Image 1 (cartoon, helix red, strand yellow):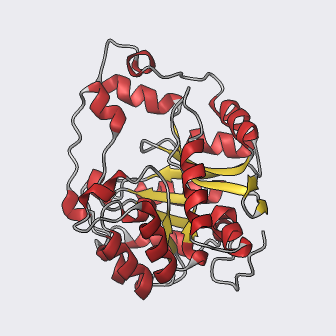
Image 2 (cartoon, helix red, strand yellow):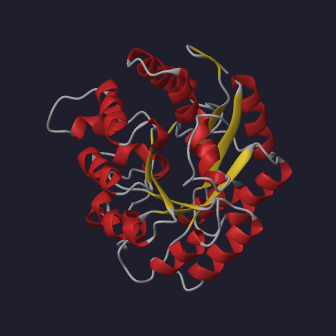
Length: 307
């Protein structure tokens, strides 16, 4: 893709994959209505193909697609297998489910890349004993990572449908990752949205744990919660100072159609990075190189900026 640093292969680290299973789960909670129509969204018959078409249109080389309900590994796995080299598959897991460990083992064996943990959504602490075995599975397989959502969690689709979101923010603090990341040094942890309101805490954990990464996705509206006035450029500057370019993953938080890939987020973030004066090597890392390194099993090797 054309950027201020030249033609750079872009990989989006954060794209929600709203599959048929996702809409079916919502339909159970909101019976009697056409969920996509109520939201004003498309429900593509061929979702994987639609995303490939969208990525090709914008020049996006790869994307991490995230199943957005538990027990939906099959949807992202089908897409990954159908378009090898274009998608990385992420799946949501509730550690409290009786088959959680078996599902994680099977998903990683089948070729999915990241287990996505939402502590506030499923009401658990990352420090609980039931989480450790899931992380041990990831540690045993190079190229498998743990995506951990911290901070503010707001599911817009539930709000639009008038569905309650019984989340518990007591479990949202990135500080909970500190001892966990130290106990599992072979696991790479990705915290999306710069910690989604817990910027200071996310940076503290990054500073103390070299296996913790940040993704840059979404419009980052959590900025309004900070006690001091910071804009997104200042957030990037601090993240670069503490975590460095080697531990930032570009993402958009794209999700539904017809909006498709959120190109404006890409443009905004690229403009910020260029304004901060980063070089081509750093840009290559953030815009795709870091993600590819993590998901090909070279997370703890020397980084040289190449893909």
